Image (cartoon, rainbow, N blue to C red; front, side):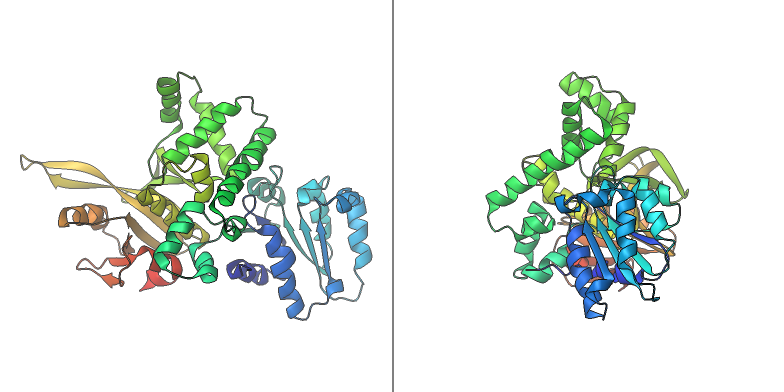
Length: 418
C-alpha cells in the first residue's frame, strides 16, 4: 500500500523553476524521504526526466559518508551535470549531515541547470533555522502526518470506524501500515522516547529531562485548554513540588515547536483586531504520538476532534488563531454584563477568513445556543462555520452559519465554500 501524498507532489511540482532551494520540513517519520525518493522521483520519470538527470543522496546512509564533506559533495554533483542546458534534479535527504550545508546549497543555487530539493528531520535541521539562513532564497514545503482524507483514501470502509482508528493511532504512515495494535503502540512509544525526546534533549543540551517529559504530558493532557508558561510553572510547584520557572517552561515549549511535535494557537481579539498575549492553546501535530505520551489513558474524543480540526486547517495552508470576543448578556437581575466568548478557530489564508466552532455534541437548544453564541457576536462578513461530530448533510441554519459534519469537513477541502 502506498499513500499518494498528492498535496505535496503538487507543491513540489508548482515550485519547479522558481529559482529557490526547495526545503522539505516536518516531524520525524512523517514521510519526507519517501515523498522525495519515491513519489517525486516517480513523478519526474513519468514526465520524461531521465534517471541520469536525477541526482539523489541519502546522507545518513553509511555509503554516503564521503559526501558529507562539502567539497566532495559539490564536486560529485558538478561532475554529474553535463553543460548542455538541460535541467538536473538534485535531491538530498538529511542534508544537515553535510558540514556547512547552507553554504553548499547556496553554491548549488548558482548553477541555473539545477533544481535542488532537500529534507532533514534531525534536530539540527529546523525550519526556522533554515528559513533564517536562506532569507528568501528557500521555499519551505511543510509535510504533515497523513490527513484523515489520505488515510481514508487507502483504507476506506466504515467512516466512523476509520475515524476512530485514525484519531487513536494518528497519521504517521508507518503506524497506519502496521496491522497489530501492539505493534502500533510500541512504534509510537519508541518514536517519542527514542527519537523525538532524545533529539530535543540533545539539541538543547537539557539537563532536566524529567521536567521536559512531564511538561509534554501536561500539554498532552490539556489539548484544547488555554494556558501559559506561568500557569504551567504553578502546576509543577503545586502538584509535583518542583520549581521550574516560567522562562524555562517557555523555552521548553519552543523546543517542542521546533521539533514539530506541538503548535501554538494564539488568542486573537476579533473586535479589537489584535493579539492577546496572556494565554495560548497547544495542539499536537499527530494524535498517535500524543496518545503514546499519555499511554493512551486520555482519549476524550471531543478534545481530539478539536485538535484534528486544527491540524486539518493548518495542512490546508491556513494560519489559525483562537478567537476571543466581548459580548453583553442580561444577568438574573436583568442587568447587562459583559462576558468573554471564545471562537475555537479563526482561520486565515490570504483574503480568506473563516470563524469555526468545533461542537462535539449538541443535544439540546441550550447547548446549541451556547456553541453559536460567540459566532453570533461577530459582526463582520466572513463565513461562520460549526463542525459537528454527527455525520450530517451540510446545511445553512437560520443565522446563515454553515453546519457540517466532521468527516465531511475532513474529506472535502472545498466544503467551507458551500
